[in-house]
Image (tube, rainbow over all chains, first blue to last red; front, side, top):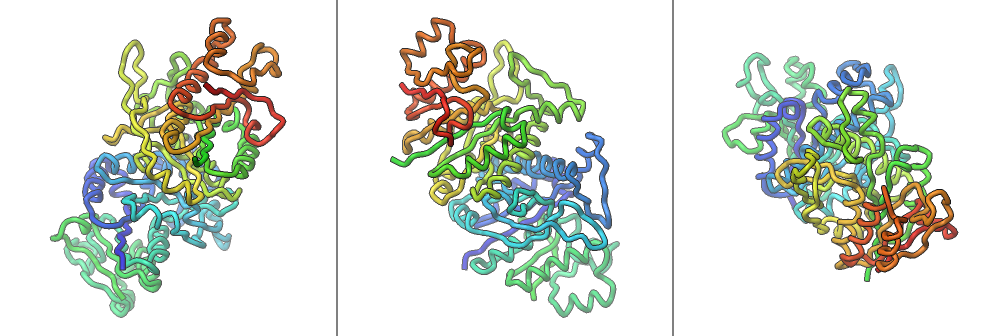
Length: 258
Length: 258
């Protein structure tokens, strides 16, 4: 079975030009088929402030009104995505930028309003890998930003962790998919104050007992839920940790397998 | 020989949501292989004003400092390109957005400083059609914005008319290429005050005599120079006029052939 790495990076890399530069150098060297997914970091908030547009967040999630969608589209699909693509090209990695609208790759629907109206936020409905499967064997590396579309002309702001998981699941039918979530920690920590207390391997049983012990809490919960969601849908392996888990064989990180 | 239409649209369509919507509906219906190239219209200037960034123009050309490049990248590759891609998808046209960095399609070099320093403006050096030739037969429609890269990680602001001409030339080896420049007039006019005085056909001989008569002047000169540049490099046909030349068989426009 063909192997495919899907790598998601977030604010700790994107917001630091030196870190980003270093990461993209290493990412370019990774052998085999790969897809990069990036979040937006602080850029959308920075631009909103410059433009005098109010930033509304509820429980850490951005409320996307029309003005905010414009800002998100400009920063995610414009500035960040194209900066990454150009830098990957400079490192010999033939990158091609995507939103979910490009090639109709990720269809979503506007999140239904329950207690909170998230505005133009998208929940993924369908991933079409046809275009990507055309590009990957030709040594093209797709680079996804956190935007999808509804098929009726509307772009939708969509969580980058979710996009990475949904891409991984869509490819899991035909590929041995490894999903890497890069963030600022070494993985799941037994003691949040001790960066070396990494839980190296987690399976469903351990996950449930760690949940019961209260070790998985706060920001880690949605991240780990994404991991297990992917695993339940045939993704072979999910790793969380610092980006160096991809290229430094001495680094510690958490590997999650069923 | 395979036929390929390359269509360039500018501010008169992009800056008017109704016009853009209508154009994209009609463009989606065009049969056969096609590529869309779009300029930026007034969007970059509007965003620069909102952000308090000074807009510098010399002889109608934007001086692209680093701040301006960010603005141009956000509006051209972000807002406009993705709005167009999402709307084409809604019309059943499987669009995929590109800068010249994506798929390493258009390499450029920073314009050398002579009398004027245009900043981060790019002159096209090389067009690589490999990725595009992979996509076109699979019913994907590439949508280019007016950005290229230098291969060393630097994005460069590049004239959209030039991008359309260079793409047309690169494809002319393998395809029968028709290049369409859509703008606000019916084509080359004998009398600028009479919109119906369209010169229907222009060849090199007539071009030279019209030049001598002073009928080609001002904004038309660079546009026609682009047309003849493309023709001299094996592009089969160049048409200039209102966008309806593409879909309204009764419309008048100028066809340029050697």
